[in-house]
Length: 167
Image 1 (cartoon, rainbow, N blue to C red):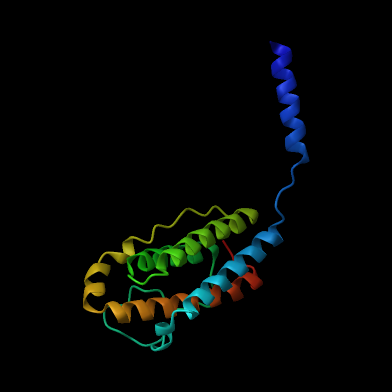
Image 2: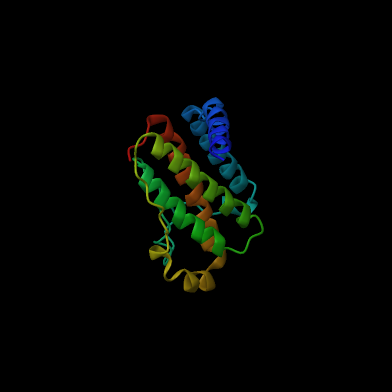
């Protein structure tokens, strides 16, 4: 009985010693590729080009704007907010964009862990308390502004990844 356990343990040890960790550069490359994919998905929605992302619309102040100096925690917080907003929008491609945002957050958590950053999962729900009322009042404007600002934030994140964000 003890020999069987020992043989299983040694077999498992041999299998685990042959596996290699994913190089962090590959994770960073995958993160950049996913960001570019999300930006492309937003570009493919034709109606997002009709409103400037910097345009001020009353009631949409909860939608994050562009940031030049982003840390991993700030990126995760922004993506969590956008993920909640995107899930509330009625357009057809929003579920795919939301899934991409979730995957992007997971990749950012891996990058943060590689730099020994403890990154708790942001929920984004605090900011969205009155989203329902805003969506009812101006659904189209909310969608266009949110997607335009998301696109800008993703481009900022892409640039920040090259600089090596802080925790």
